[in-house]
Amino acid sequence: MIWLLLAGMFLVTYLPRLIPFLFARKIRLPAWVHKWLKFFPYAALGALIFPGILSAVPGRPGLAAGAGVLAAICALFIRNITVIVVLAIAVVLLTQNLGIL
Image (cartoon, rainbow, N blue to C red; front, side):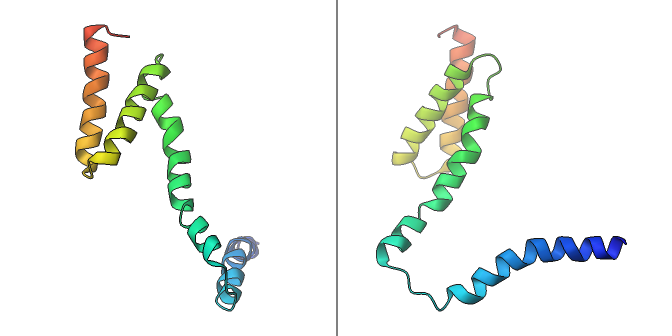
């Protein structure tokens, strides 16, 4: 019985990935679709990160959102992710310790 269950789970998860892979090579998509699809990783990353930002500082989602906005602005000018994260953490720590906001 367990082997049937495993085989069923394999088919349910593998076939929906295999079928588009096999047939998508033959389909030519317009250039605007390719451009549009390039934004999917950024949208998915944003959807994963945003809830974590709001819950980063317990009881103060506004402070965490402000640090997230600061990190997003810094990311436009600074390409080193470590610097951006350190800046956002420093802003949150300074804001909390100095009693601002």
